[in-house]
Length: 218
Image (tube, rainbow, N blue to C red):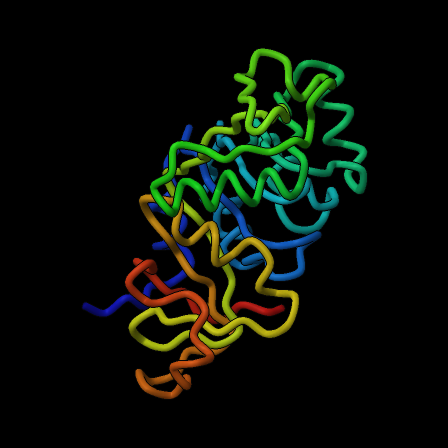
């Protein structure tokens, strides 16, 4: 199976109303070309799961600025004043999740777990409506897995079967998200033949990746 498609074809796979994970940490390691393709394609009413809200002109912030996002699940929105404004106006639903908890909930989905136990949020608004489990006399919140219809990740080097190598901090949430979505599209800075990436450097195995789009930039 040839996994290589162009950005327009990739965007067409993301339908209105989908829940989409987007890798990146303040746009570092975010598949910018795929986001631009979504904007051009007009996809709307998305639920976006990402580390942050980007900025109005960068990362998932561009989708927010274009009013394509119905709900955002993230750990930080402070760099995007528009996201806060839309939340306060009731025009976009935002669920704030502590960063470590967000990562673990995504990991739990990919690992087939029923959730994770964490002390983070006990005694705060984060705990409202959630189950509390006592282990050895200590309280933990049961945080349930986060799944998605699709995940958009960015790889530094991707081979033709979808195996991904990430340079430095571009790795961030991408490997976790690639395991937790039904459809995974990898934006690649460089596409190489199978075998060109040393096995020990492969972080995301190609079995998790459905399609590859070249031309990304870190």
